[in-house]
Amino acid sequence: MKYTSQPLTFLFISMFAFSAVLTSCSGNDDSTPDLDVSVSDSVLSARADGIVEATQHIVESGYNYIEEPDRQPNSIFGTSCPTFDVVVDGTAVTLVVDFGPSCQLLSGPEVSGQIVLEYGPRVGGLRTIDYVYQNFVFNGHQISGGGLIIRESENINGNPQSSLSENITVAFSGSDVTATRVGTRYSEWVAGVGSGTWIDNVYNIWGDWETSLSTGFQRVGVVDVSTPLVRGIALCDYFVSGIMSVTQNNLSGTLDYGDGTCDSVAILTVNGIEFTINLD
Image 1: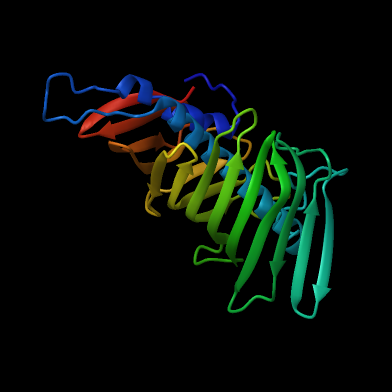
Image 2: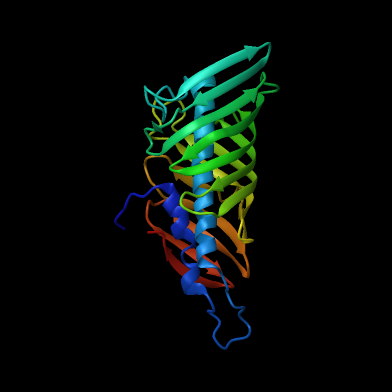
């Protein structure tokens, strides 16, 4: 299938746009429940997921830049921004990643403000990192909150891995609606470790999180470690494989991203019925 490049945020928007065609699919068959989904709320919830996912990658890239530079000497950060301020007090480290009033990342997004990380020494191969967004803006969207990362420099596969507990709020640009995502996300860096560039990086992502809008809408997504979402930063703008379980309003189902091919197709299964979803 022809590949059309899009930012990851729009992947998530498209992923839930199917709700318009699924509303009231049951017709006169009482055995199939009405799939009553708000299109606008689904789109905003999906946009929040895409924004949060991207900003969390920036957080971890900032940590990697200072603490694990040998694994990725050429990062998503350019030569002019951001600046890194490292303060060491005994065994405690405070890292301020300052993007200033405007900073264009090599991976595409425009950001501003600061991300502040605080951490101590590694204990048993693990490091606990607190992070918070300060006046941080991602592509025009105001990001607040933060979370806690447990960073494992090498898991049983020999790869860097992070577990991240999050409580992040997104104030959408041009809207009075906000979205808050709370949950736990796991990320394993499975390819491109130590290659010297961010272009070949690939990540497996799993976990569970709830995205709540100020409209009252809520959506839960669950991804099992056995079927993680697989994404690259540069090779493909889509998740190329993995299965997500989705619950929102009266809809529950699974979304299957396929066999590893970079294309815009995923399969949604609801009540045993399969729908082909075009992520474009």
